[in-house]
Image (cartoon, rainbow, N blue to C red; front, top):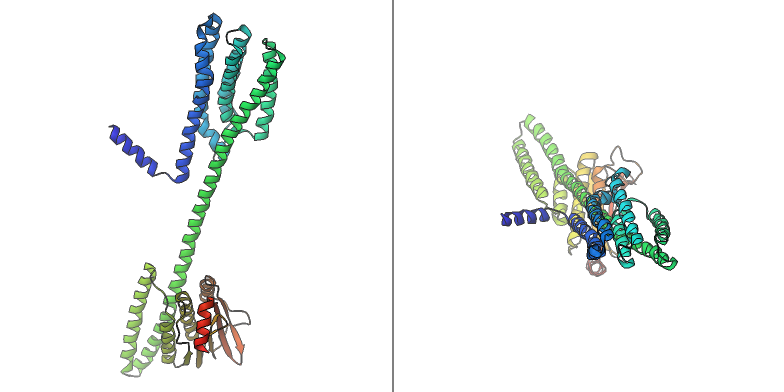
Length: 420
């Protein structure tokens, strides 16, 4: 039975987050601290003096009982008070009423003990500190700290005067006032520091949750861009070849079968690439994309020339430029009426520059830098490696897309020497 109970406790602990574990540990410490003030400061010293006379027994016994009830009530209020401080709930004033009543009753019993001689000055002061601290540990979480300090100062003055009336000398009453200030500081420091630490921890936990949500959103955007880049070109080519196959079939040409075979191959390739995107393994290869773009554009009757360095570029740069080439080829097929297209990749002064230029300016092209979801996705992808993208009419009926990506200094220098 005990083994099952321990196993359940371990599972409950493991299922909690880090902040929840720290909060649970802090609450348990709070509960123990309440009794840690009560037992050595009130219960033990007062119990030792209960048999000093009937007055000590008559007043000390009820004070012990009130102190125990005060600790129980404080433990019950600790969680709601902490939630109030952390902004997770509101602790109404009436919830503090039992604790306040017990505090007033305990203070009255302490003063009565001191006035009747039922307890010596040290025991009376320790008992006073216990009942004030047990109450203050919870109360410090509910009211603003300035209010707590002002009320503590007022309580210190009132108690100093009360102990003077109970028979203490003026110097002893001043000591009581100073001790009240000391106990108030202990309560405020202990409660507020622990609660503030928890608030910072929960804030960090919420920040991590937001960061995780942003990472998920960013991954969804990346996935959407990848799907657009993968499907876009292939769908454009499939549409083009399907239209060509229809025309050839209407003319009774046997080449229609070849075009449909190519459509089937592209569809299968699209399926494979979509699976790779879903698995998160796909990266665009610049060389393969350049060859693919040249082949696709040439098949569409567009004279395509490709000029690229034979030396290798960093993998991240190749992948990003490969996506640009793919999107650019798709746009040439889909949005323009081009007859010629040139793709140039060169390295100069620590930059790799990709220029895609064609003579089929899109009908909706303006003088701006170029838009569309495809180009926007490319800009986001390039921003991750410090690259920039510009697209727009270049005059003389040309449309130009220019990408610049910075290279590491040593790589850029080596490639510049190779391509010079």
